[in-house]
Length: 195
Image (cartoon, rainbow, N blue to C red; front, side, top):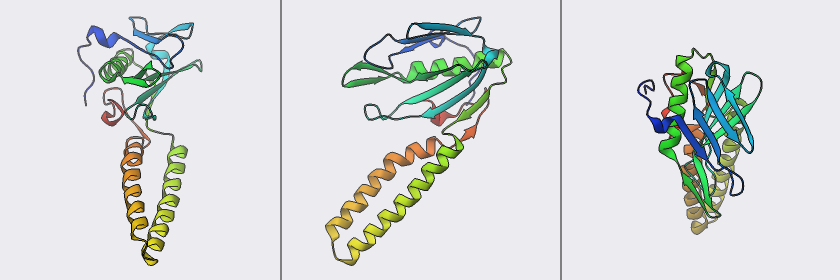
């Protein structure tokens, strides 16, 4: 998808609460660079000083539809931007449109500044390989349990295993599919990692 183009005022700033206590994390795209205010600290990173961005899909129990952008600075600093914000002890609200607009606008500004940042999507390659290995072992174990349940005539247990496997595949399958490691460019962001 193309991301360069007109940038509206709502895309220039973004804020979210990472926890119930504490102030909101605030970000703004200025002419000079990315301005951020997090937990009493603040800074301004020029767009050409941003060394890397990693986009990922990170669901949690309170919010199954949550995205994350990890932004690294050439000096070694790193900040995270999440697509959800804590509202109450039991409610984490999605901010899909604001997050998407801000991330797209950030990439457009970086492109205008001639950024050479490393742009990656999904999990790291080693982490992704470990997840796939764990899922393979789990699949073999579940298949063994299913075969055993069918062999001894425990059809209720077999039905439970099939149902659990289907639910697990639906929940984890989306996470694994979206977080496949890959690179992208400033003008073609991965749509599966933006709300």
